[in-house]
Length: 234
Image (cartoon, rainbow, N blue to C red; front, side):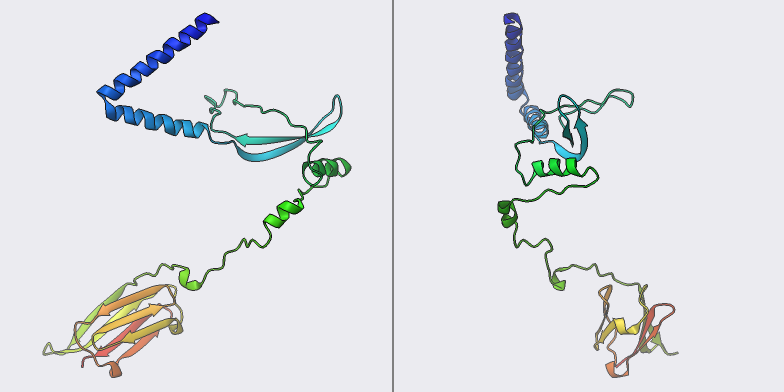
């Protein structure tokens, strides 16, 4: 016993000496080592994560209902291979016979009297009042919802006469998924164009020439989901 303790103290002393040398000769490596150890230690200190619960019975010396909580815990190492046994850690059993009448004891009694009935856990008055009035669904306005608006594909063409004089501007905009012109909002000024479609598409264009807004026309081809805009020059 004494020899074992002495050997352990020797190992600890050697370990600290190694850390001192590392801190003095290679501070960066020492820092990385400490950070990694703290990170690993934090993982080991995480509580087990509940997964599911099994219900069975203890037959001797007295028949009782047994609930087995199965948890996942990062402290438990994974098996070395598919053929190796799975490591497990068994916690201390707890007797719920003295538990609250409204919680675990209620589950036990309900299960014993009606084996096919799935019991429910009832909250105590104090527990129920603590959650009173809490809303599980948060209501937000539509303005807070960010919708991804795409820039549609388009073609812009300046139509000229035989003397190369610009006459009008034609724009074709592709709007996949849109089957009604009522979903489109078109705004044309002398120098620019804006099309917005049902929170799906948005296109803003600076026009290469000034146009006559009063003579501007638009046509929507439903079977192709394409919008054609014709803007005579001013």
